[in-house]
Amino acid sequence: MAQVGASKDDFLKGLLLTPTNSKPILFFVAFFPLFIIPSETPFSPLLCVGDLFQLVNLSYFGLTICVTVWLSTLPMVQGFMRGGFNKFVGTILVIMASLIIANAFF
Image (cartoon, rainbow, N blue to C red; front, side, top):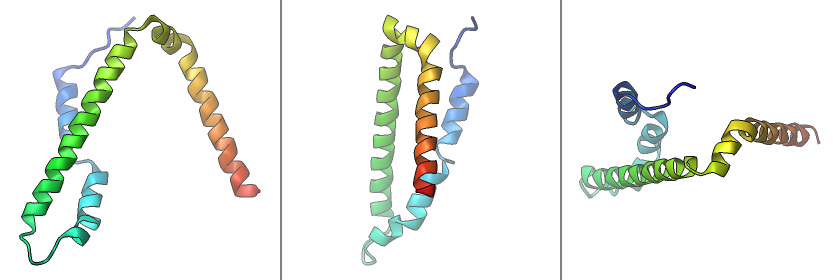
């Protein structure tokens, strides 16, 4: 079995992906100006919201990584990932597709 691990290149790709992610950029460009008070300096609220966004982003992904690493050490989860995960995800996707089709025609 191939060894799974992150390399320095993977880290750099992830680091470059974060500031170029289109969803936060579209949010800050489209919706954020609606919340700026014209009498205030525009950079102050922008920096506060940007800092808060990055703090939440780092916390969320850090927690996700910690939980994923912890779960991957459990024997039950390892067995599920080896055998049943693809079947489980496939079943969920088929159910969701069926619901979408049923909703479109009925």
